[in-house]
Amino acid sequence: MSPVSSLPLLLAAATPSPPPSETTTTPAVPSLEDAQESATNAASWVEENWSTWLAIGLRVLLIVVIAAVLRVVVRRAITKLIDRMNRSVPGVEGTTPTLGGLLVNVERRRQRSQAIGSVLRSVASFLILGTAALMILGTFEINLAPLLASAGVAGVAIGFGARNLVTDFLSGVFMILEDQYGVGDTVDAGVASGEVIEVGLRVTKLRGDNGEIWYVRNGEVKRIGNLSQGWATAGVDVTVRYDEDLDKVRRTLTEVGEAMSKEEPWNELLWGPIEVLGLDDVLLDSMVVRVSAKTMPGKALTVERELRWRIKKAFDAADIRIVGGVPATAPDATDDPTAAVAAPSVYANTASPQSERATPIAPATK
Image (cartoon, rainbow, N blue to C red; front, side, top):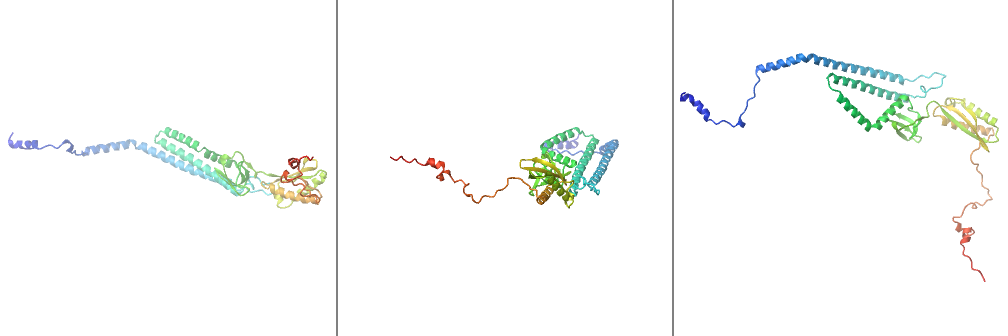
């Protein structure tokens, strides 16, 4: 080897090499063959799985379409059903009003139908959409067991924490579905009583006799006394002297009832004839005669007041005396008005036994 040819080798040996940390690596540039191989693999994967993904997509689309159409159809059917329930029932001339007719006013039917429709639509939407979501997740081969278990545990926890709310809601739903009471009814709910002004799924609003508004939770109501359904009973007890003629008393009461039944507006409030039931009680110095009649719900007190008014006037005209209570006696003018008044203290009266006993004993005289 000649020195000239060996010179580059010597220069290379004499040049110091950089430390290992300072060496730079140039990223490998993919070659054309690698890119072609990757494209070929992707194309083959798409070719192998496109039918599966297309089937999954079509299945999901079908589930969504069916769920949407079914939801619309069910909601429309519920709306038509509620509208049919909300229609007022025409009354037949000459018949007695029923609960489905005059007793159920427009506001009561409207609120009841709205509440029932809202509950039914919400339940239908939840069931349809929830079932569709689970079917879509099952289409992607997702294990639904942990999801359902978690949902069950969460539902139990929420139900336990909000049990009062759930109780109020369920009680309100059944009260509305069973039509236990409605707007305009006078009810006795135990915890409060009054006229129903609003019926909700959780709270019922009552207006009391003094104008106050009671908010009663539906879950707290254990019993309901509805005074506005069916008919009411107006009863009046008339107390007369023991020596009165019973036939005359009965005849007078019958005439009062017949006259009242023919006059307006009592002929509409009375749903039956005013009947004299007979003697309700016999005492040493008086007799109690019972009078009763069926009335429109909520109008019994009004009929009773008018009936007492007419009986008093009729008895005065027939010279029949109504007795009751302790008769008042006028004081005698000759009596001393201060005779019955006790002294402020027994010791203030010098003639009282206490004062005489407290008086010192006088010494004996010789």
